[in-house]
Image 1 (cartoon, rainbow, N blue to C red):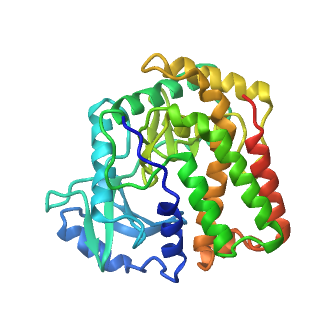
Image 2: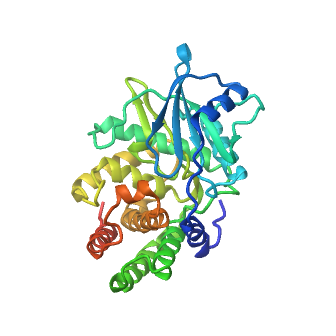
Length: 348
């Protein structure tokens, strides 16, 4: 697919809009329940608030039909066209034989509803284990490479038109711009963040030759549910968009090889073994450029800057202040920048 031009402003503009005090609208679960019934989705039992920092996710019982998960989209994050593309991609993947959480059709025929001004989608509850931080055997890792290849085989058919860029360089530029220009990083460390972002962009130049396709966008173990003898089901396509295959594969390496939570990477030998096993499965489905392993570190470093911008844009919200209480401190930022350097220097 033809690569879109670099975009310094798309993500920076998005984070600036998000930084305004615009909290996710609190929808009354009782009103939502009545709305769901009118939309043809009958639910019973208590409402359960499920963990989600970015959106709001509620669970409802459905008696013998199991349970229903309703995702309320953060206002201002995605418009209807972008959500439709997310749902269409999930449908394409399902038709391609890939196990994904697929939005349910409402009485209107659409998979998108609107309640009290908030877009929502409903899904069947996905049974299975979250294997984040669990050890996977070699056959399972090869299988995940194969799964990523199947996902990208579908993703290469066309590009998304209404989603934000997942090019690592765009995310790095936008995140660094938002953090530095908005004085959201301690002033004594702003120059260091600028230096690191320039080093990341230089290291990412090699990715400019990689094809762009539709990606999951957050393809980590945390977005899979595993059932015995059935393998994983992919969930949460909120970050779906266009980017290089390495973007998804890097997150698989990140989770499997132990580069999770706090930027503590596993050994180079472990990362190399995981990367080779993933590539073995992936190449059973579609080609993978040999250069992909050398870009893992810069891609993960760019993503970390992107995540820091995300946290900064939402830090006025109570849930973010509770999860990241020291986010504005110099000590926290010194650790974060040390982790970005560690990512940038990763070798697989």
